Amino acid sequence: MQSPVRQPAIYLTHGGGPCFWMEFPAPFGPHAYEGLRAYLAGLLASLPAPPRAILMVSAHWEEPVPTVSSAAAPPMLFDYYGFPPHTYQLSYPAPGAPELAAQVRGLLESAGIAAASDAERGFDHGVFVPMLIIDPAARIPVLMLSLAADLDPARHWALGAALAPLRSDGVLIIGSGSSYHNLRAIFAGGEGGSDAFDAWLNESAVEVAPAERRERLIAWERAPQARACHPRAEHLIPLMVAAGAAGDDPGRASFRGRIGGKAYSCFTFGA
Image 1 (cartoon, rainbow, N blue to C red):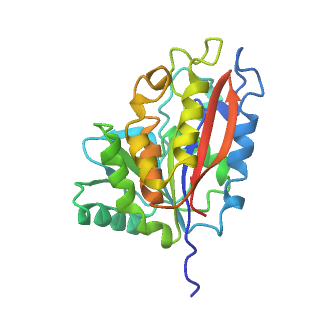
Image 2: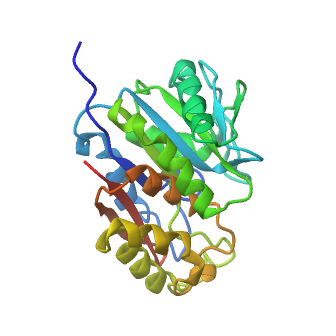
């Protein structure tokens, strides 16, 4: 049997709600998400080999302790509100990965991180929205991992570091969030502080040494316009997991673009 190929760790912006199946008003416009869609559609082709499974850390799942989904066939979880009826007919029938779930929990507990399992959890839109573009055939098993409700960046960095061995076992680790996430300002005109924060985020994830990367990202609240872009941290914290799993691997900006006037980025660490 061929040995698994080591996978990168990725932080991606998953878009707003069911964005790829809608047209949005100004300042977005009907084609606002085309660039992000193209990036997601090409993500598998950018990998060194097809992953045997995907571990998805979604901004839309928080628990008292990190919790891993163990359902063999996760249902759909439509955790967005007020969108057109057709967006509630989406389906993503990818298999789960119960055996991998046990492995994930074991890695966390071996690192001294309390963890739990959930056999009922369905695919929330932080998972199914990007995965419908990444792997529309739904062939790759998808495992979900929650955030810890305290949203502590150092804790989530350690969580990612504990999961890093999965990469050598052919598992793609994806932190699914958004590099800009201020819902009160998202439809307002202008860049909303996103330019300064995005420049800092790219510098911190890509241009500095790994030790400094950790120091800067954990202290993200000190960044320019940090709280203007993230009044609450849940959409940024998946980056900490991905960067923690990166170890000393270099980072690169795998997507940079503007959506509704705001700057957004995605990052790939490693291969």
